[in-house]
Length: 278
Image (cartoon, rainbow, N blue to C red; front, side, top):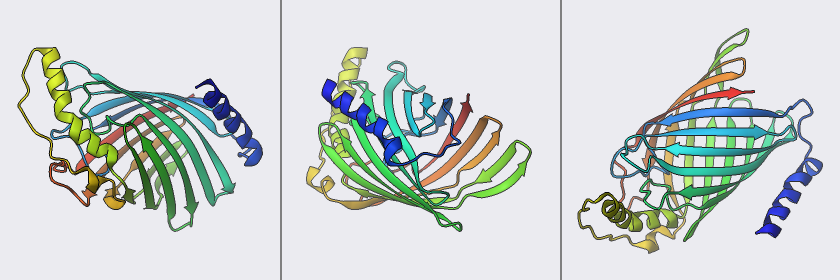
């Protein structure tokens, strides 16, 4: 573990030499509060609507690296409200000024053993991405390797168009219509479906209640195939004033290759975010 940590530190520290970050960048902190009306992952969710609140504290280095810590709370629960925490380290860089940018990151997930939220089987995510600004639109592609008891590889491709609606002084209002496609395997989602009932029963015993008997019929072979699994239509709206920014993002998810026993009846959700940079 120590050798791996030293290797990560050496790689991150050498990146500014390999790819020069923008000179005008300065180090800063960010504090973010996020609220989502439902926990949705690639068009899939739990059997009931599961809103959550996320709080994130991050530090961004002037060379482009950053570290974040996130706590996710699920307010509609009587206990185990703090269900998930995430530690993330990454690096954002520019390959061609105002044209081509890249990003690398690693995220470690820590979930409650009783968690039934849709991402509860993820233990870590390694991610690499590129984005290209073609003026009339921005195209991005991202490759994720997710792992837990099983592993998944996912490719995400997005087209977006940033539109500045209003700008006066330090006030800026913008919209960014986006369409995204997700293709990959879903082994970890299959693990979630298989383990969900047992977690409900385990939590019921802890709480002194009895969960209804249910048998999982997940066909794991279907989830090991690489497929187009979801298309998302989103319309982020953002407002910024000095170092304070607000955003609301309505998203409509269109799940594809849906198997029997999946939960896809709540495709529309909203995400609200407030961020302060200091």
